[in-house]
Length: 234
Image (cartoon, rainbow, N blue to C red; front, side, top):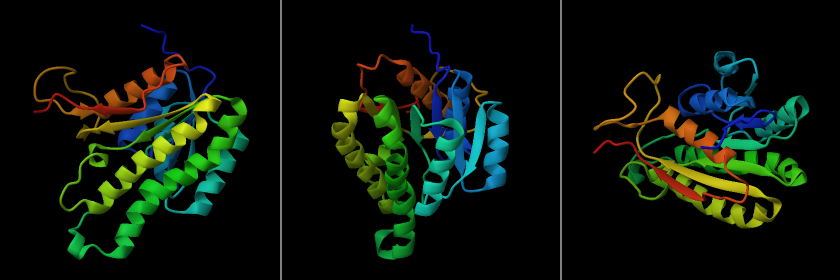
């Protein structure tokens, strides 16, 4: 197995106040990276960064706010330099049947889950292009491959993320930048205190985090474009 060492790398993880994002930030930090984490609440993201480790720095940012994304990216680059790894994890779910879905809620989901990813990626991409290297991870969902009743806005945002990622791949692979979409099934986002194997287990956020570290350490000639990740739940 390859030595999974990210020492000297700078990583950005959006939506890392808790859950999947916090687990990803911790795994990247434990592998040696310096990690910038974002979240809507300054207090929550500061507390999360403190719990991740000494090389983790917090940046308050609402993924639905284009100006906030630009300010966050400028601050990260000024403080830490252009990132080597970007994990677009921030997202939200507002469910309702289509017949009842308010356009304001529809727009809010797409602004966070799709437009926010576009703007965050766009803000950090020039630095990766200048380095001629980078890894961009898109945390999608199995809802990006199948629609569920009551989840039209969420599914639309995740299907859109697939198309955005595929187009981006063809634009930046000549710059040795990898775009990798991860589609987890149901995820346990609590502390990883349960058994690691056996029947009837859901995927854990720590497993997703370990996958990202592994992929980031793979040789640059390799590209996993689209990965479905399941637990052993029936």
